Image 1 (cartoon, rainbow, N blue to C red):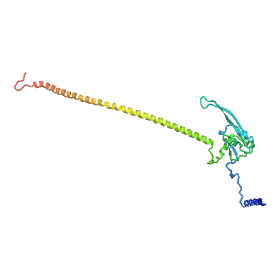
Image 2 (cartoon, rainbow, N blue to C red):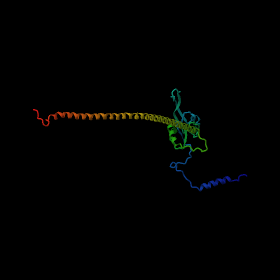
Image 3 (cartoon, rainbow, N blue to C red):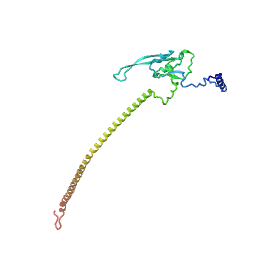
Length: 263
């Protein structure tokens, strides 16, 4: 069925009539910031720790507005007998936003997630040279990068998270095994010490029992001392007899009855 002539004009007039009935609102910028979508392309932030100086972003940039300088350093071996390695060290990373056309190719091709979009857009300058942001300025923009959107529950887990979780589980299992081995060794040592202590206590009982005859012998010695005491009593009795004998001469000194004392 061919379209009715004038249908498009009628639809346009309907939109105009609906808009005429609404109250116009003026955004009070810069006092009121406009609402921006979370993935707005404002400025590029640099996460320097992830940068490996692979130069992919600089080579893929269509405007050649990324400047990177670096040098190589020799890293000593991690283990004795290992081989030395060389790595690239970042000296300069700058983006000239007066040339940038905000295509986002540099962010897409970065294999190590070192570049991110920030929704900040208020960085106008009076001098065009100030629009070249060095790595310190690019790092400050990282604080304004929003969190990534939530992953779809049905989506596959990223391989980075899977490998990190697998490594964490392996380290936890090794730590648990080491703790269990240490606990078993400590329990065995405690059992050995307990068994040795019981043997020492059992060996000490015959010594205590063997000490009883000595005590009994002591009683015999004490009993043997009683005759000495008895002998002492005899000596004392003998002493009394001697005293009686000594008194006899004195008794013989008195005259008997009917006798005259000798002159």
